[in-house]
Amino acid sequence: MTKQIDPCTLVLFGASGNLSRIKLMPGLFRLDAAGRLPDHMVILSVGRGEVSLDAWRADVKSMLDAKFKNGYDQAVFERFIARNHYHANPPTDPDAFNKMKAKLSDEKTFPQNLAYFLSVRPTDFAPVVEQLSAVGLLDESKYWRRVLIEKPFGTDLPSAQDLQARLTKHLKESQIYRIDHYLGKSAVQNIMLTRFTNAILEPLWNNAHIDHVQITNNETLGVGDRTTFYDATGALRDMFQSHLLQTLALVAMEQPKDLTPESIRTEKIKLLESIRPIDVSNLNKQAFRAQYAAGRVCASDGHGENVAGYLEELKRDGVESSNTETYAAVKLFIDNPRWKGVPFYVRTAKRMHEGNTAIAIRFKKAPMLLKDDQHHNWLIINIQPRECIKMEFESKIPGLDIATRTLSVDGPQRQKDDETIDSYETLMLNLMEGDPSQYLHINEVEAQWRLVDPIVKAWAQDKGPVHQYRAGNRDPEESKVIFESEDQFWRYSIELGGDQH
Image (cartoon, rainbow, N blue to C red; front, top):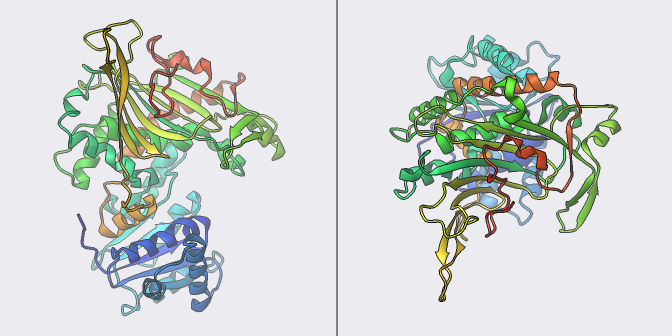
């Protein structure tokens, strides 16, 4: 369903940064090529240094050339490049925002509906908003004004609440768009539609039929050159607090009354607020952490590559020791009638044997068991690298004997001629449309931090050695301590033969 977009100006802070060069500018170009941008839509890129308009447009062209190696439509390029303007906003200039206001006041050039994309350091979120407000650039008396905040929104509950308090001095909640780029992925959006548009699934989507749910994000990559950031953050805050809890909300929430942003958000908030708080006194049965040690991972060319361990990488940057987790697995329960008693196992890790993001749902034992180790039915929604939905079930082996084997129905979500849309393209379009359904409401942010903060605090206070797992291996055997029953195990790839112990 295509929505009407008002004429608007997208004010892009941090326009010369890596995110803008790799994702945002190419994404806006693709939206233009697809005919999704209104005719009167302008991009004002904001950077620290003085750059002439011709030089900036040449730089934008270099971003597109780097992204689209096979070229692009020249007519679309001419239209897109004409949308682009530049404004220098040096941090040392106390009058910079007044100059921005003066520039934007040219109504013939800049549509007065303004969407601000803050691709800046988290410490700059509130100051930028405060300065925009001080010069009247957030005033909605005549036109709409929206502000997109990149993650992370705080580093814990108090900092998130402090940031919210600073923002809401100048913005209504409806003006704040807190991004979680995972929510822009087509395969993540598909979770809700798969559930609620298929009559064969919803009757089974409850504790009467489901044994447990696994939500997984594994990577073969290590922390790379992000050692300083990562050591201050860890797997729990980097991935679990945001992306994976949002995925869980979509898997487990009740059906919204309609597909309006308000209805979808309402159900996600209810779900997140109904997750049982972590019992810190019994934390070792509910959460497990580890760090990758030196090992061998599969490289992009298919060959093995020897890699250093996390602590070795830190030492190269002058850090002698760390308890920061690169592997985190947490068991959660949802205290509502649908999910009472069903464990949700949520895990994320770096330097694993495979990179995969998936929801794996194991159903309870079949009413007829022909053998003790008969396979359970599984439903797997794979998000990346391959977008697909897969069901495994038992079927008779042809022949004289009574025996079954596991068959798989595998439905690729992506067909041959489907569009490939980057998550940032979706979210920038939603920002201009005024659709916040795939952005985080403050109640979601607070519920997620309330859940995560006690684990982070307990782990920070525990000075004991952190378990090590060899890079390129599967989950540490010790991580199984969080399972509710002995026959549960980590589900790995989506290949047939699901019960992989």
